[in-house]
Image (cartoon, rainbow, N blue to C red):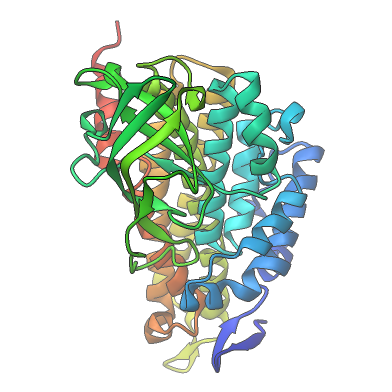
Length: 411
């Protein structure tokens, strides 16, 4: 059954991932390795083992103390998880989008918050690798892939969330530098990271006036707001990123002027699959926790597992989990292959999976009853950590807009 360890006198489920993974044969119909190649099963196992040994035992402490687990992430990078879909010539692992989803699902069973940050870091590294020139790739990517340096994605502003194309942060060309002024909001890793991939306005209104600059920590004029207090995602800091006459070399621009919005959206297509994959891991762990609680918790003289109502709830949770995983993996393959329907599928995956996985985790908490509301129990942290997945990387309302627009413009 479950073992416990102490974190400041708080009993918490230890080795959650190891426990879940070792239990999978009893839940073969929800096994996340179904349909995978032998190679994919191998690195999935590596990710599950890392999550069990290096993340799950610290998940509660990182949340409680708001620790950004730099050393743990650098250990993950030694396994190739710092640049999973970055090209090998600059230190990446060169894996596919499907491979990436498999890894993030496994890692997030150990700590959703930390895995979600790793996914954002990977997205930034991929953007530099894909849209940067050789000098930029060689300068930034090796340290990012090794997680000797960490990256943040800077698109959202105080006045432009879902309406990202209306961003106001300006970059005025002066000689061989851009002078940045403005601010970004809700930036994961802000203040603690080293490289900021920033969308800024170099031209007129709308998406075609936006460019993408890489801003390095320590650049004069770059500063940060207070560390935000959040419901979840507490193992990664969130701050405003502020630019006040911040001079950034022109050679740090990714792509041409006016290509920034396109670069940002292409990054987010993969980011939506990544964040959906993190939701899958939380949901899978929650299904197992709920099942085992049902097997030991007694009410009215028998275990909860004998309640047909709860049996049906558990069946629904497992079904939603498997359906969600299939959709994520289909979207990942479509994006990897550059299919025309990839953007819509990524949006569908993000919408459906983050909604359904939150529902799964929330139902798992309900099955735990009052115990599920205690921080002694892991299920509440999964609920808190994945709630934001329905908001970031494009809200689920925006996902509906993208899907509907695609359907209505089909010839």
